[in-house]
Image 1 (cartoon, rainbow over the protein chains, first blue to last red):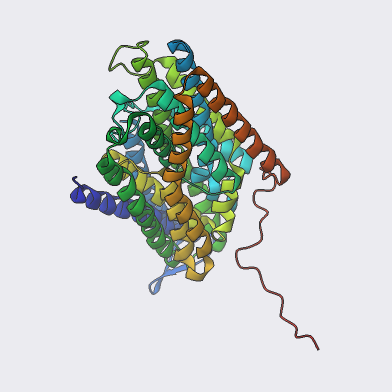
Image 2 (image 1 turned 90 degrees about the horizontal axis):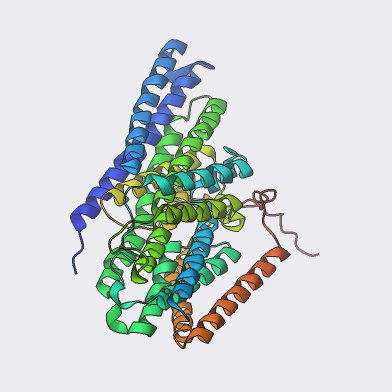
Length: 76
Length: 379
């Protein structure tokens, strides 16, 4: 009986990184989008609506890339 | 009984199993989306149904084995497959009645193992494979999905703590539409394949198809339609358990749970680990609940679920074994099993009508931690 511990570890690592990354990216994007409605402070400085939109766009694009790769894995 | 008749019976039974598989597992993708209001209940089950159908056609990874090597498939007959399917269907219906999200794959494996043990003896079952392919993934995957969802939820709430509440709630709800669709699609590519594999192998053993041939189009289409129809009908009892009874799920948690489930399912199926979508999604919902507030999770429900998971394989196995024992006696026995199976299903349906759970009342559940009225001491 052979248990592939290495592959199990890979599964754990990949799903941890990918899952947490998507959630964090969407969360950051929503922080950025919030700046369009109300002032959001990041560290000591505020985020302007324009910066917020840019941050949101970048984060959502990165999340979309991961989701796209997920779709590719399903189809391929 | 002529060979072709039992083959027809197996095909129909396999499609019925596929149907129960569909409504049993709607909750995996859609429970939290329905609970948070990201999708209206009827819309959610329609989306999940369509994506399951699409998934059935999408996957090029054709299911060539019924059981991933758990059973010696050269030694089983259509009658054994029939008995195993009956065991799996009965257990799926019982767990649906009590609203427990148990694994349809484990029910199928259990039913087939029980039926094979009776019909072909101990040698027909590869217990080492049962351990590596069923028991170890079952122990690890829900914990892993829960951990990913827990960390994701924690980060999600920390990162958006000072952001605009309305934007965050609405944003995560929109995200949930994408993440729950991914789970539904991944489910379609996995679970519809199992029924296709069962039907295809039955046709091969009956000599209708050439050895090593893939499923014909009518098998793909009928299996896809059966699982999609089941999904669309919605297992509202299980959706209520996962969406409302585990924890009061908010949209960031729903998104975290579904993203974690998708990541675990895709990573492991890509690397060849068969795991239960149901167990992964349930684990992720517990993790997401705990990520916001540890005390906000009803751990008693987790205990009940764990018991249902442990029981699934042996319980479906016992039903499958009894069904195989009766059905092996000949045509009359097979008819008896079919009649009893239909009667049990009708009985469970009749019981479910007493307190039906539907799209309209699925979210009407007392909050996990109701405010207790102050205790007044009698004078």
